[in-house]
Image (cartoon, rainbow, N blue to C red; front, side, top):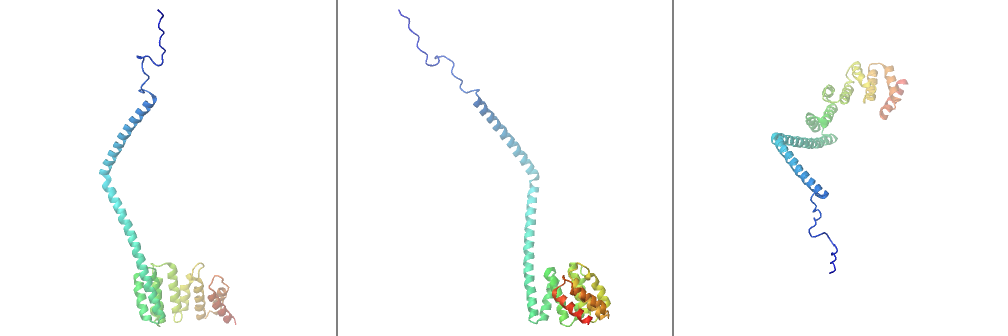
Length: 248
């Protein structure tokens, strides 16, 4: 009897160990690591959330109060700015109305409106104070006008430039009846370099010297002003005319 040939092997024997199912392979290890990492992340997030809740329960009310306070402060600032803008618009309208009254020759009514604005302060209040004093001078009450300007010149609540302007106007209205020496003394600080009213103060100083009999002193000042390129053109022209008249 011929021996039977063994059948060819087309695969693993029936009872051969199967290929690894994937347990312990690299992809499975990575998946397991990611799973564990997710667990720890969730635990970490829970701990953070718990700590935050504890902190919020302890300090949350203060945070709420702080935020509420900020909102109130911001709201108050916005409201105050709007209020100021509204007041400025109202003052601007009243100031323009007072100027219109002056143009119409209704100085008494204009003076009352200027006086009302002056009491309110602010930029328009300051302008109204000067306008009120000028109306007093125009009406013939120079003493009251000078007193008003002197009051402005001694006010610590306004800038120095406006105080100096008040001094200048006070001296101008009082020079006709006042002491020229006192006028020159009051104007001396205004004639310093850098003062915005320097040219006008020098012109008024020259007038005071002329009134006091110091013809040469007045002439020198007028000559200086006539050659001063920083002085207003009209003032230079007046100074040149006065210098020519005094030199003749």
